[in-house]
Image (tube, rainbow, N blue to C red; front, side, top):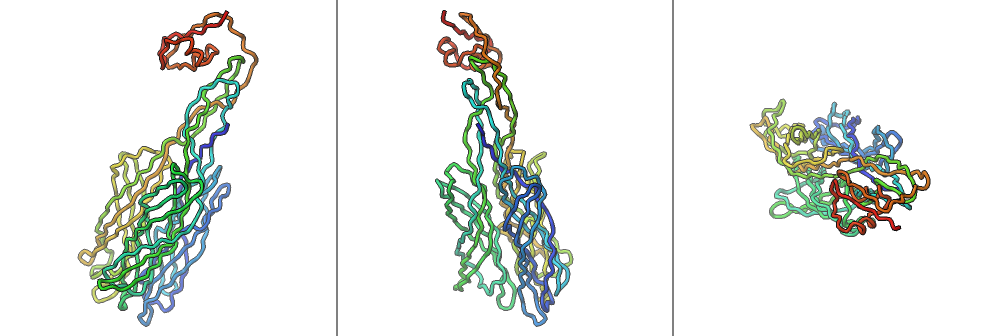
Length: 485
């Protein structure tokens, strides 16, 4: 009897750099430089996972004749993550940009800091003893099976109102926050919210707008039931914005192309033997240990952060024209003495200085959050942070006050070691006990099964012969077995 116990194991995050050269024709000033990345494909090998990803670098710059131009560089890249891939059946890996640096003006050298993290589907289980003629004592285990969701792409739209008129859209990107996932039969639904960051050209000036675009998805997946637990990855592939002018500003239709992937987990109570005996034969039992997933936990919290960050060399900023989509450049989770999350929120801002000059700045906002929720799990913990509702305002022309929301998800599980019967060896026929009456004195912690094993009977027979016996047994109880003359 094979008992399947799959598990999702976190992949150790992999940080690395990607360098690119980009030519900006007649550029005199770079106003914005940002990057996006998304995973395309993963190949599993014996000692590494090769991740193919799409890297997009976007540069907004001024030319010699005063025009504002946009340059996009899109390329496919591959990174190898070294790890043991024993029993790995599949992976779910996200590629994230955690920083961008550049040097030069017309022929610029860009260095993008990236991180790849995710989960691996580990196929596991153990083969236990078949009952046959044996009388077995069983324990119960919640066994898990894991299957991949069918990867799909879908389009969602959301209509929002803007208080300002919008011009030509230069760039648009989004951070996705999943609010709720539910399923019934093979239909599962996702409620989420996209924070869209748009940069547009209006009246010859670069400006930025942020939209909160709620969305609802309904997907069909064979094999998913109401009791399934879904581990998903929702990634924006593209953002399209259509605007219509109104009396108060503009009506905006946001269209998101989303990639949906992941796994669904099903659990079932199964029994496995931990002890056995034969009424007629002498047997030797062979036991073994197995490591199986135990309890799991998922903690979701929304936290507010706020910080005033000084500019390094700017003292005369007059206005923030636009900001880029923020990202968490570094984060960590500490459980001792209390659960604490620390990290840095990074974003790019375009400032208008006194006199009209434009200046690009990269702002890093540190945060430290003490969680009120207790984290029950201590193994295989993963930390995911999404940033939304960013607000920025100038302070005295030399600093910026940044505030926003952090949607934090912490997942993990604990493991336990179980002992089970793996095999049995028969030594021959058991010598028959010819005693008319046998008496068994119950020891500390023993059960009726232990009595039946010692007396070479079974629990049903002992209950019939001992009608006054009360369960559970106590140390010192006497159990009688009568043999017919």
